[in-house]
Length: 186
Image (cartoon, rainbow, N blue to C red; front, side, top):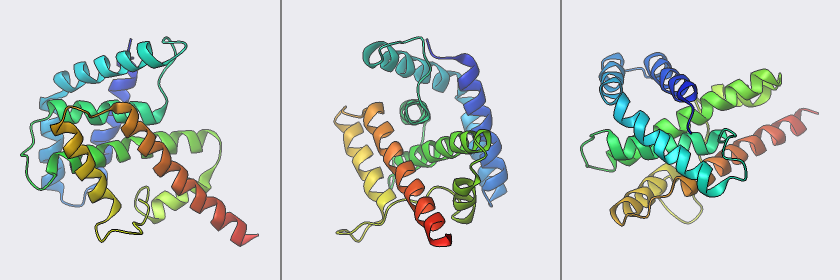
């Protein structure tokens, strides 16, 4: 069963981060209001996806999901339950923004607990986790990811596990840059 405490923490942290980090305060307030209005629907969807993943893919379903899967469950819940105009990949971009925000929140907590401030400094310097550069495409990574999410949604193939894997790889990509930076300073 998905933890009510975890959802409440994630939801509250997302609202706080949006209110403090989004420069356009009117837009931040509007978005937070919409999130609050649909909190119960998002919560139920998040819990169902979370529980399904635990029961289907974990050896011990009583253990909590890792941060990537939690963020991915939240992304799918946003995509499924938050009414957003389907234009210019708005809904998918919103899900990516939210998933990346949740990942950042969890990374901050882990790094503070481990006194590992290198990644926090890197994230602060870049105003969030950085996306990889695209080698063979003119579009940025986030656009390509949003496009993939859009088509997976339209064909009913959207998977929280796939989203989780992408979030894991993005975190790994950012950690790699921190390690390189630390080696340069030696």
